Amino acid sequence: MRSTRHRYRIGLGLLVALLGGTAPALAQSGDGSGSDPAADVERIGEDELAAYVRAAAAVRAIRKGETEPVDPAIRRRMVKAVEERGLTLERYNAITRRIRQDEDLYARYQEAWSREEGGGEG
Image (cartoon, rainbow, N blue to C red; front, side, top):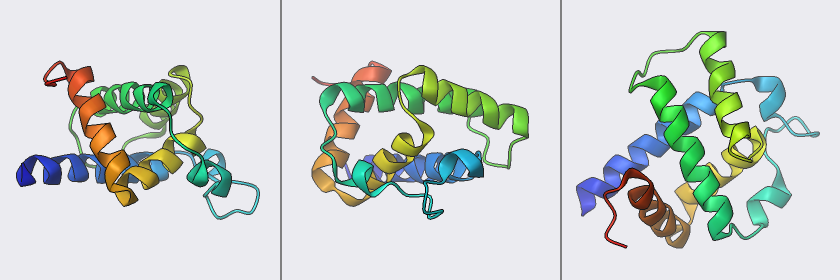
């Protein structure tokens, strides 16, 4: 179980790195800090978490497991994939930060990811 958890955290880290630097103008809030305090505090419901998981899966498919920097066209595709699943880039990044910090949300994310990938138990 520990190795699975570690793998998910690595995957989340890669997504943060990818989208955190995807489009600086899109990733910044009005104060220029790149974070949206309201988004960080709000409860993340099941529908939004499912949208997040679908967006993360789409980004992963676009990246095809590559870890080197991507060109601007690929970055635009990743941002579009997130937005097409009903999230702003800012909200996607806020959810990613919350998943990394909140153990309960992380467990919900793992469960939703498993369902999305077809390998879940529930």
